[in-house]
Image 1 (cartoon, one colour):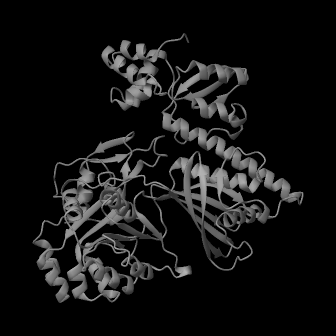
Image 2 (cartoon, one colour; image 1 turned 90 degrees about the horizontal axis):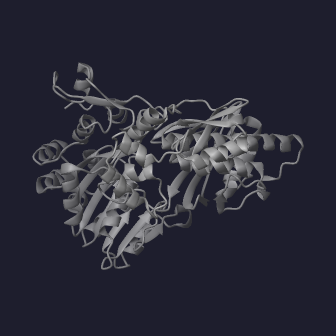
Image 3 (cartoon, helix red, strand yellow; image 1 turned 45 degrees about the vertical axis):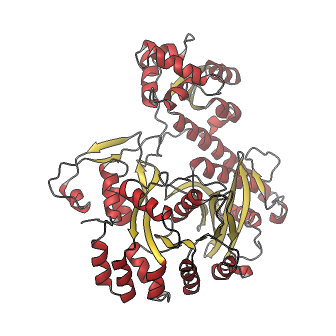
Amino acid sequence: MKYIRLGDLLVKSGTITQAQLEEALALQSGSGKRLGTVLQEQGFITEGQLIDTLMDQLGVEFIDLNGYSIAPELAQVVPKSIAKKYLVVPVRVTRTDIQVAMADPLNFVAIEEVRAVTRRRVVPLIATAAAVERAVQNLYSNQGAMQAIEDMRRDLMGSQFAPAATIAAPGVAVDEEEADAAPAIRLVNSIIDRACTEGASDIHMEPGEDSMVIRMRIDGALRPVITVPQELQGPVISRMKIMARMDIAQKQLPQDGRSNVTVRQETLDLRISTLPTIHGEKVVARLLRKTPALSSLEGIGLAGNNLENFCRLVDHTAEGMILMVGPTGSGKTSTLSAIIQRLRRDEVNLVSLEDPVEYNIDGVCQVQISDKTGLTFANVLRSVLRQDPDIIAVGEIRDGETADIAMRAAMTGHLVFSTVHTNNAVSSIDRLLDIGVEPYLIAGAVKGIVSQRLVRRVCPSCRRAYAPNPEEIRAMGLEEGAPVTFYRGEGCSECFGTGYRGRTGVFEVLTVTPDIRRAIYARSLDRLEAAIRETSFSPIADDCRRLVLEGVTSAEEVHRVLGDIQA
């Protein structure tokens, strides 16, 4: 294959214009980015167009790495350093040739590097950048994990395995290439590194009768990643417990702790808990980024009337309480963080009470709640009220005492935000009454309630339109025979074959009107529902329907999260 410049190839094929190429080259200069990346960022081409052009013009074969099984031994053929540096992954090898999947098959420096280390003719194949990156991570992290497991087995058989207490330090830098580290450390590091690469929110280490399965929660769904032999689960669990400053000798009681780790220059908090089971201790680690991934209201999924109502509620409420409600894992913390980011100002004293502090936010006084030391929400809230606060964010209302103090603070000139674990806006009123809050406090303090869920986004790379059947139309609360189009993902290398990539929020925003306030005070559900119908309140089902019709999510995903949403 003779050398040819990507820009000239794209212009020649008519994919872009000469003017677009010149603009992209100017933007590329000094950025360190590849031309293809700049062209995609500017919207001049899509990754699919780039791949199609290279296939047509160069005759390069496309390979879909989704579900493609790359032999583990190929990690020994191309060094990890080259694979990561040039974003190439070996997929097939013969005595004379090696086929490598590449995001950029015109990268002749990468091809020459692979040829030099393998002493074989290199046959480039084209794949999406995300698929190659994931394949590189999976191939070499699995290699590191498998090597660590073999080393642990060998050390165990030779009675040379170091006692668990000598192999760890609480604050660690995750580097799976640290050859001198103990095998248990290298295995745990490779698991954490992969979890970060995959964007996992949780790591589950689940002991069974014969082995321990490692699963990761990605986009809200658990996926198995690796299996650790049963005889080696002890050192792995001990490593996790030491990182979290737990008692490794105590195996009969649940424990919890946390650890700070650094993964490729990103600092994370691991919130780690253990639970005794019949086959040993189960460990779950939640990965918490130090900075919020989503800091705007639009970023969390608010749009249209919901966004307008939400902004009106947040920006024009000087005192009172605004509640975020939803089940565990529905994104309430991200919404609360976005509100804090929006309201923090030099002239405002904003204090947040959190358990745990998930995101560090400059300019905000953040307090870590700890029931063990007596720093409960209720106790800290009393102290905060003596600190001249303007805005108070209470991470969660768990009991009547906390609710009572927060409500009274909201009625005495403070703006209070908090979260409650309920299914929707209306049921949050019942929840507050159940934990003993007086109706007059709820009616006087609560200004608005925001209920939310998280739904998975249909993968844009494999999204396909289809005509829904009558049952699907009814389940979505639409009129029978309505000429509507639904969308679903077919599964591709970009989304692990699931058809989904990423998540977004769905919302309902209830502004408390005088009629609603009177219904709450009277403890009348019928009056409350009638008062809500008189407002512009739009239930969460409407937001779900909007996203389904726009192709953002699928009818199946809405049913999984909310069930049927018939009108």
